[in-house]
Image (cartoon, rainbow, N blue to C red; front, side, top):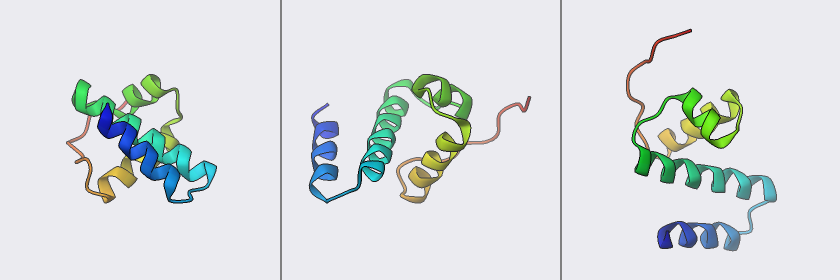
Length: 78
């Protein structure tokens, strides 16, 4: 938890807009969730964080691009 608080403090100090701060906090929450819960599908993340699929995909793509997470395989499609 200390690391998360450090990241939150860092985001507040860099002069981010409220929207950027919210996205940063969402990414931190997703990282923490994945760390403790293991690999999850997009729909599981949407349900866990009450966010839309496009929002989840955008945040996950940002985390992939930043090197924080890796995409693993494909799940069953509906």
